[in-house]
Length: 461
Image (cartoon, rainbow, N blue to C red; front, side, top):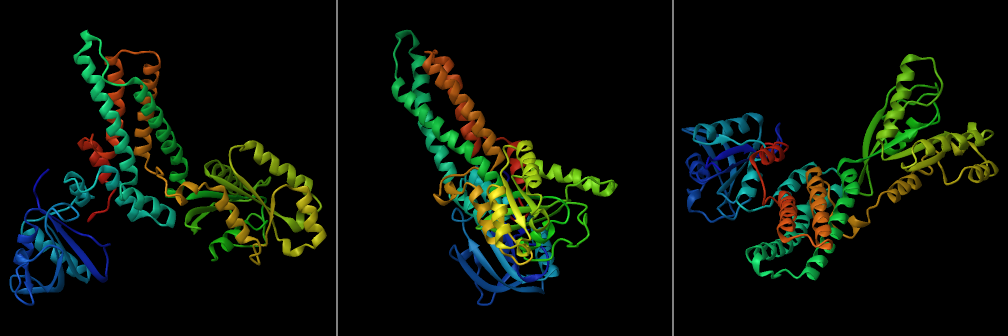
């Protein structure tokens, strides 16, 4: 790790009320001290850590801005180094003047995620916690925020570290046996070892299975709204979003392409996709839209099938058959069936719909009746029990891949114990499992891995 002092804008670029410019490194306080003139004549180097000071940033005789300077001395800072944070006025000109000044005085521009990388290298965060920082910044709903906060506090890594420590203990005993191979002794209690492997297997399976939930929560759950033309798909999208996002018209085939937008329901992000109506058509452009509709159904986690109850009241059997076709084509995909425009029907007709079509939701996208029941049904489809119970949920693809590999190696160890495999061969599989555990928390790293992870961070974090 180099000892450069780095500088970057820590708040979003662009004009605003205030901006924060961050410095970190061995010379951060020294460099800042030379350019900062306290209103009461203080020297930053003589101040206690975690203190804030009012003054001006100056370049020779030129005053750039009145600022507040926060001092964080090593090792009690985010990066574990000396850190200075300058709160200045949020003018683009002021931001750049201050940054350029520090670049001339011995700093260099921070690369993407370099502050957090230094926090990892200095032992302030493990690797999974560092990755959670990026997830926290990008979280745009309550659920993804909650998962990122739990991971950043070490919920996931502490669980992995505990398993790794226990496995490492047994690995040491197995390795010790190899030194006494001629004396045929066993230091590792095989019964206890089997119990540990069973426990690790159980935890790994739970974490791997949680990725199915965690991944959609992190990225938003795609929901395709499908049906024949002019049944109210665009009106439903507008009702869900509470804005006129999609064009609504009495003319069939208005929606020629897919329209997507995302909202948060009960803290979970849902990405609704309004698709072109499904029908036989000779219109080339509309045909392309219908083809895209089926592609979006393939990509979605949930499908909403919408039909116009006022027009279909005499052809409900045909509607039921169409619904069964979609269910048979996508048997693993949850399907919500909605009878729209029920404001045009009487009680007898509504009863007929309920009798003919199973588990149908009655809705009027125009008046908003039934929209709340629909959102509740969507939430019920998502397994958020683990989230409510504050269990660990895996959202990171790299972690998921490492867990799968660790699980594979643990199964080899389990098989080796059951078949009486020799200690030297057992040790190889155990070391591989330990390697994949270490990949998650950062005990095992390489420059390429770190480069890939921190390249996804924003500058200044």
